[in-house]
Length: 281
Image (cartoon, rainbow, N blue to C red; front, side):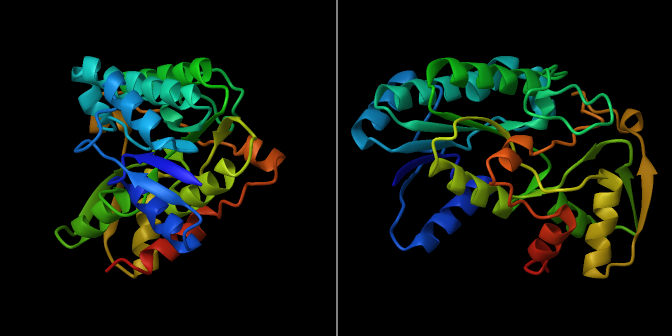
């Protein structure tokens, strides 16, 4: 299978490459990132896709600076919505599949029940709105689509886990938000899910997060507990943090569709975190 991968230098892109390489040649993957492919340039995307003819395009590229999106709306929509549309159209033109990575931010974060794939969207930030628009663009332009919403992702690169470990070496006490809840998700688990999905024709929208949930505060405490780090983690509210973009307070996702097709192999978030932290100093 030939795969065109965008955002290859991000956490998910790096993990996909690592896992693809373990299949001894089953997957031929083309690595692209902003340095060699501008997904907002429709002509460039079309030319590359028509020349390489991948069986599937996995779009891991995104404008993920949530607060930055609030003041850079045009670029947020160009990268997060126009880019996916360009990739989806190009894939459809040659009969290929498209994987679009989406986010919990497409929901408003209200309620206390895990969101399922069919629940109504109501994004509250520019980032969330641009990603919701991307979902619509992909659905409209390619019937062979996998839209996968994930959340609180960590892998190889800058992420919450590594930030906490770094700060623990610099401070005696950390203040971490205690009123936002979600499911910390390992890029390892998500990449495994994507690879299994692209070998099917079970097209549609999926939620892909590790099982269980916690607050950011509880997440931080679990990181330190696993690593045996003695540090005080106190609580702070979202309002006290005062960030430009509105964060969903309850963004736990239910992998309902994956369960229905028998492909929900996501581990409990604590088990995945323990596995990840084995390699973190």
